[in-house]
Length: 397
Image: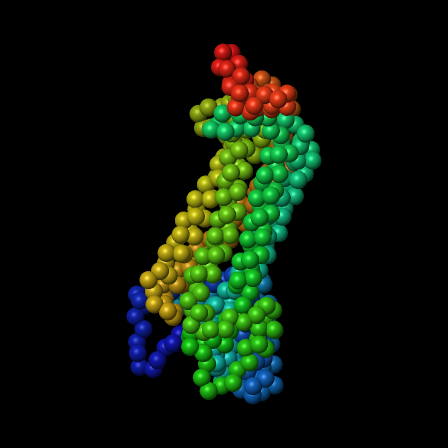
């Protein structure tokens, strides 16, 4: 397969090619449709400004739609020799259409092509995450409706503190995840900018391209105007996406940690169905909350991916650098991890139960100490004095 950058008379070094390609050919399999959509829009723009004839743009569009169809059946394979999805698709066009296929890269660099493709993918993936977060919120709302009136201990310092309830507990995560959805919308708006037409970071000379035209076809809200900033935003925008995903997993980490704690033997007011637990190879009585423990661990994974992406572009001068290729794997892994975790949890949350009798037995008298203080306050006793009176009562018990 011909590399897009290959020059006549220069022999490729296979070791260098393997190293620079890395795993891009594997990651790029999820980008085929989006790269084709970018190329269709670009071809239509080239037709609009007179670079492609009507018959040429129709042939290119038809062939790109053919690729999308082949890919939907899992038959458009990208190999290490293809280098990446962009090279694979352009070579396919050239093989099918000859010189017409060679015109597709006019007024485009692989830099703005890659970014355009990735942003279409990111927009779709963010929408998928939003839907699953809503499913988690809905599962918590159902759980709250079923058990919300049940009173449970509230904890500070991992010690019983005051009376709480399933409703108060569930609502805390509903509100937290609702905030994350707001964060997600701001991230979506940040990346909903078309980079297509900015070339390698310094614009497209001579040709009078129409960036607004491709923006409209591709469904971007606006343009990312400055071509240098387009390149500088790679890594920055990915970092914002991972910040969003990390904060979702922050909330999930807290949620599942509570479930593990509330379901342990001494408390036990949350009941995990046995089919969602695992056993021990030596202790036949064990019912381990492994699914929640693994979900809990994903927060640290997302945090490390976020940090990796945010550190990677530091100290690079303005413009594109091949280092930025490494950000792709982090974002893809982040989306995959969060999506898989949320899908599993949405299923498990819908099956959790509350042992009302066990919960009631845990509401020991000291949990009402603060209430007793405020009852004295209502009788006219200064708060600090009432605090001392009730404090001495429980100290002597």
